[in-house]
Every structure is written in C-alpha cells, then in structure tokens.
Image (cartoon, rainbow, N blue to C red):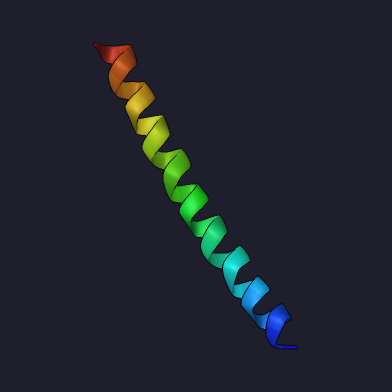
Amino acid sequence: MTARKVQRRDVTSGTASSVAMSKWRWKQQQCRQTE
C-alpha cells in the first residue's frame, strides 16, 4: 500500500516536471530558430 502511494506521487510529479522540461526545450528551440 505504501509503495503504491509513493509510486503514484512520483508519477504525478514526474509528469509535471517532464511537461515543464518539454515546454522549456520548446522555448529554447524557438529562440534558436529566430536567431
């Protein structure tokens, strides 16, 4: 039970961080394209 709770929390935070990372990467790509 405890392990499952921790796993679920990790997945949620992991998804959020990955989304933020993809957004940041996209921004970096856009900046490079305009240069």
